[in-house]
Length: 198
Picture 1: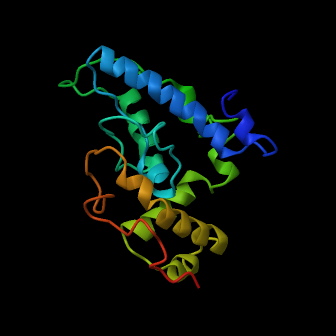
Picture 2: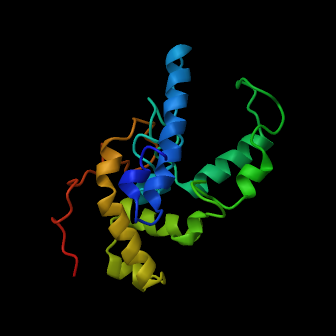
């Protein structure tokens, strides 16, 4: 931060400073990956990738993302399932491997104190339903609102989905499991004056 203070003088702290933390962590993880010849995985899920809740050259840094095409609510279900079940053919411990507090604590980017994703997004069950309708089902904003979702949330989420395309283009590859994954099945221009914003 000291290096940037002369440039940032007179400005308020914002996401710029928050992203520095994520990018420094990425540099350290990439150094470990490089030194020990290991593949660095990223952990952004489909919900986060859809709305751009990821830092370029930060938590998006890595070579592969195993949960890239899995919505956040599905990630929780998979975690619970793994904690409760271990198929016979699988390696690893027979006990809980994902701490309960990881599953139950409020989702957060952890870039500032007391931050949660719900400071600026609806609960993930609502977000994922809206995203599923926009992405997988290609339902219009108008019809999603008619289905009972809040107009402000639907409009905001659709906007985030469009303006985050440039980040998704730079994301590492991952497993395709849904009917419409980012990259292969759903690609939009990275500039977004192509759409009607009225």
